[in-house]
Image (cartoon, rainbow, N blue to C red):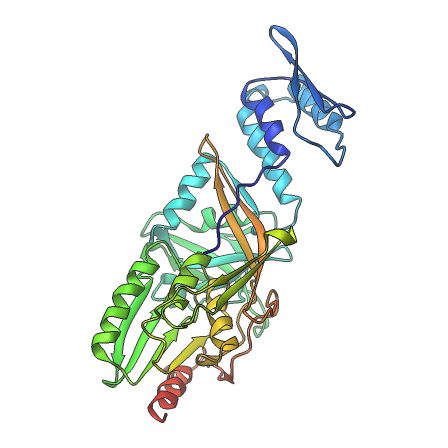
Length: 405
């Protein structure tokens, strides 16, 4: 299983000064000492290693100028908020929408989102080239009912442009109390002009795994996300599958935007045997690269398998599809997947704040890099999302394939 790494970065030294109320620091780059001016006078402490010889004088000059001259004194005397804002600026400068610093309040709200219970519209969002984009609407959500599609660009939220919002800020602006509505202005590739979509917020309760038996002989498992409860829910589905003894198995990963990497490996371990490679992890330091195998005793390895994917299938969904495809364990049917090949680590700090940080890239068992490319299905079947009534040709193709084996 992919082990989380404890990261140490130079900003931690900066945090120490702020959190204890120190007002001024001066780097001595030759011997890596820091002189701290405290109420009791100067104090000399050891600094974290600073191999890049970053000069922070400008930062402290600006900080001092804000304190001495900014009009609203109440804002500049709130040192903790300035600390959080500084760190947010540090992560934003990377230009990576998946690397985000969150304050204690934001962290709590983010954690609530992982508990499969929230109030909002039920859509996973991302930022691409400065644009707020729908990654996938959750199944049976208000977003899906309103017709939002993966790839839709959210240009405005309640009339306010999204161009200046961080991903977190946009999510918080869209979320809200059950029963209230939000108006999203959408840009869609095949539409001539932007259009408004009004969505009523609801309580979103997502079952990670849903199982049913189709036509009395084909097992069907929809995995809607890879959350902390998904492994347990899939285990229950496996028990029922073994009782039903179906002729074939369909795993539906369409509109599944991902989640925890280790959960996808756990599920693959029920499908692929002999401790074969589930995923490769490539980090900044080659010596820390990992080859992650499935664990032994897969209970479903002998059942013929089809996996359904589309352009809303991302991250952990693509890990599963890539492994199944590389090992020729089953057939992939649907549309080109999203193409998210990076791995994030979530680290919590003592004050309740957190950092979600891109720490690695994942590759398929054969070493394919799918980032910004996606996975091409073995059989490409387009879904007509505009058709009324909708016909699920992808699912129908999967059922017919398994029946005719």
